[in-house]
Image (cartoon, rainbow, N blue to C red; front, side):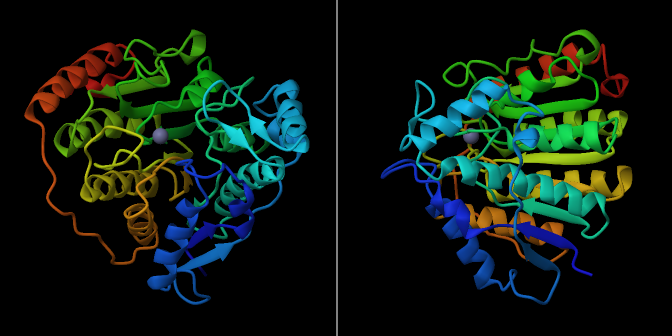
Length: 357
Ligand SMILES: [Zn+2]
C-alpha cells in the first residue's frame, strides 16, 4: 500500500494571476519537476499522485458566506479581476480551479481518514489561509485548510483538529474562522504581522470557549533557525501534546526561507526539516499518523521544489535532504525573538499547563 498521497492536477496551472505575480503556476511546476527528478511521482514506491475532486458549493459554504462564493463566481465569469484591494487576482477559470484546490484538500483528509494512505501533501493553488468567511485576501480565494478542518469536525465528527501554520505570514482567515471554538487549535508561527496582514499578535488568543485555542508566535523580521526552532520545541510541541489532536493539518508555506521575495524571515532548509520531523513524530504518537500538509506560500522558485520535496520525502520515510548554503544569522533579531517566546509562554501558561515545565 502506498504511504503518501501527493494531491495534484495540471488544472491548478489554469488559475492565471498574470505576468510578474509571485503566486504563479511556475510554483507548482518547479515542485513537480523536482519530484519527477527523484521519481517520487512514479507508479511504484512510497508516494502516489492522486487527482483532486471538485469541491461542491456546500463544501465552500462550510466556512464561507454564500455571498463571497457568488462574488468569486461572478468575477471569474466576467473575465476575472481583483477580489480585494490588494493583489488577489482571478482569471476566468479560477472559480473552478479554486474549487479543485479545496476539493484536493478534502480528498487528502478523506484518504487519510479512510486509512488508504498514511499521510498526504496537497499541492494546490490558489492557496487559502488568508481567505476569511466573507473575503478573499493575500492571493487566497477560499480557505482550503479551514474547509477541510470543518469537514473533519462537522461531517466526520472529530472533536480535536490541529492546524499548525508555518507559512511566513499570519493566517488571518483561518484564525478568524476558528477564533471561538475549542475543536480546532490554531497555532501560527509567522513574521511581524504589522505590515501584513495586520493580525497575529501574541494577545490574540481566541474568544469564548475558544480562549487559549489560538496561539500566535510573531517573530521579528530576519529571525532565523535558532529562535524559530526553540519556539517549536518549547511552545508548539508541548501544547500539541496536551491538546492531543485526532488529526494534524499543516498550512505548509515555505516563504520563511531566507531570500524569499515576499517575506522576511531567515530560515534554512534544515529548519523546515526539523519542524516537519517534529510534527510527524507527534502525528505518529498522538493520532495514528493522521497528517495532511497543504501548500500555502513559498515564492523562491529556485528553492521551493527542493523544500517541498524534502518534506514529502520525510512524510514517505525516504532519505532525501537538501544542503543549505551559508546564510547570515542576525543576533539582534534572535534576541528580540527570545522576548517574544517568553511572552507567548507567559500568555498561554494560563491555558496550557505543559508550558510550566
Ligand atoms: Zn505567506
